[in-house]
Image (cartoon, rainbow, N blue to C red; front, top):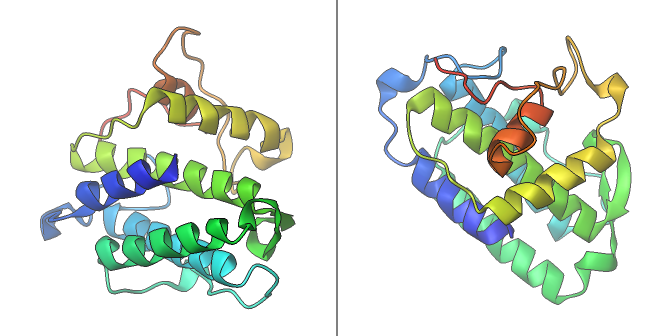
Length: 188
């Protein structure tokens, strides 16, 4: 499920004009450039985790400063994921201290999917670009979130805001976004 989402992320982030860098995003603490760096930092973090599952040396995802180019980062991450999962990483324990410990590789891949789907939506909304991941992928990511987001992870200073109420028959991406605490109708 992750490959098409990563491919679309490269498309989404290509050729964003510099004047968009300071635009607000649905993430209150980030403008577009800060959100791009945040996402690139996390892509590097996951790449390191899949490269050395047992290791505890990971780049600080919050310290990423550039270059601001998604294509080589995504290409490297995609190759790492393919190689790691061909080698049995789905059932290998992966240490991800920034995410609270060690989990099966398949669960870490799900966390990467959630990160990319959510922040891909954020960037798309902030820059007025299309972001239409496969509904089944969004349903899967939403199920992952239902299994991991506890009430104590929501609120000021936490990774997620309070859940936004949407219709049960809303599109899967809208329900996913709303569960993360973002309003699917958000505009800059």
